[in-house]
Length: 295
Image (cartoon, rainbow, N blue to C red; front, side, top):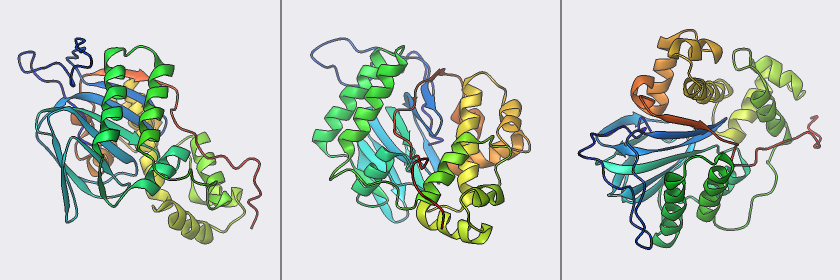
């Protein structure tokens, strides 16, 4: 991501997206962020190349005008809409496009559904589905103030990209419960040992099962959650140092390193000046409260 759309000069800004039915499209002069715990949508114009990086979200990248290009390993794709699988190292070429970057939690119901619909590390969005995506994203761009409606449009956008039947419940209820606990816990105090004990597993057994099901080691997953919460903290007005300390990073340098690894750039580049909105989570998160998870 790093990725995050940045502000362009007033002279270079254009109306975002194709005109639908001849109506005038809304212009924005700063990047706009819609944030929730576990994901976000960023809208804005940007250019240049984001260095190789990898994060745990499924990334949907749509150019509302122009095109973008992505490289993941030996796979290269260009077009108006691309989806990147989670935990895949990728490089993004932004080409001065007005972009929407949508990060989807792969452990959410919709994230698991979308993940099963992907063709590989990079998936091109088909033209018919792309049209529905751009319509929804343009609606968000034109009317930025209704958080509930924005969340609904984001949900509809992702659901439109899913194929096949909806997935069944999470394959391992112990991992589902662990994910639920992580969401509820203070990120500064999450430990593998505490979460393992809560699902009646030894730390070594839990670490193995968690990594196998989630696709990411426990500590790396917690680092990702800390980073997404730090983004929300910055959006709420905290300094980078305060956001770092509140989300379990030792200092702002630690937060900067994590941001560069996962988003391709330092927080000052990723976030920068912009409009920040916190909205309800658009996606259904896993819960194991009514499931038996004792081994």
